[in-house]
Length: 418
Ligand SMILES: NC(=O)c1ccc[n+]([C@@H]2O[C@H](COP(=O)([O-])OP(=O)(O)OC[C@H]3O[C@@H](n4cnc5c(N)ncnc54)[C@H](OP(=O)(O)O)[C@@H]3O)[C@@H](O)[C@H]2O)c1
Image (cartoon, rainbow, N blue to C red; front, side, top):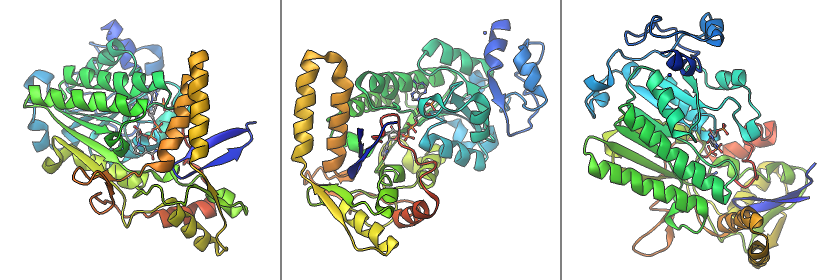
């Protein structure tokens, strides 16, 4: 039996280099566009590995503008045709990253998706599956946790990078993994991108970093600060920091349980927290806007979905309304979580290896009580009115879809927390 937290409650369930360069380049595969080899790349410069030769009939190498890094001035990319704008996406295989890649491809950008050879939750997707998920993008298999390797991968493309978009996130929210991915690997993507000419960085962050009580929030904030510092040092470099409210996947965990007759579980009176949920597609569209929109340059951008903010109580009522059932709630005192956290924190003092378990408890507690809304600096209170809205997908439509089709594609991360 394991205890799984979601934003608004919890569920109980049973656990049942030339030659050298060619080697790297062979890991980079274009699967959607049939583009001729750019001037900066030629077969006599590269000795393609066997695996690449094998794929050449299906995939052509990365297509991009023929300009070299030296010819590119730092902010000129915004005047270029989208097909000549080279965008690297890290975290391309995540819940949001996949939609961001599709959106950028649909907008005509030359999209280079960095991926691991086994991607997805617990590495469940093979290379071929990853290529299928990222159709239309040039997929480059590399390692964001290894700066040298990432730099080599980007250099091996032989084309300048204009923009880096990061949708990286720790898959489990553990203490060490948060610092490794939300800070270190994200920093690697900035450094490697800068080395290859990138003059704009779009960061997918989170609205909850406004009130940092958790390690992943501190890791994200440290990177945000260093990103802003980079733009301060170099006026030709810009950033957009996107801080969204709750994703649909984090709110859908109880839909199927309630459909099966279980009560809707919430903490306190169900009004402890609220959010303006945003869909993957709408958030991806907002992130893609950040590539060219000058009004999104050098800004922190909190963003929610359309409509009013919703408390867990309102989300539960919506669900019962859609099901045509009488509402049935289970209200859990928030003190239970405080007690669990106290126990876990005490155990960590004796068993340091339990630090992640304690952190997961704190993450659950945070999402049960803190709103995913803009924290008004004047009042110190969360403000639904001041949280900007974007997009068209509503939580009600999402719940309706999950009731009909299930939660496929909406799986939570490795610890089923977010
Ligand atoms: N859940 C919410 O409601 C919510 C709300 C606001 C903001 N956010 C923020 O949104 C961000 C993205 O969330 P998401 O749900 O799209 O994340 P996700 O699905 O967990 O995706 C994480 C991405 O990072 C990559 N990654 C993780 N560990 C890696 C490693 N060791 N090496 C290489 N790549 C690694 C993953 O690659 P693999 O596929 O290879 O694992 C994947 O592409 C997070 O920063 C989160 O805090 C979430």
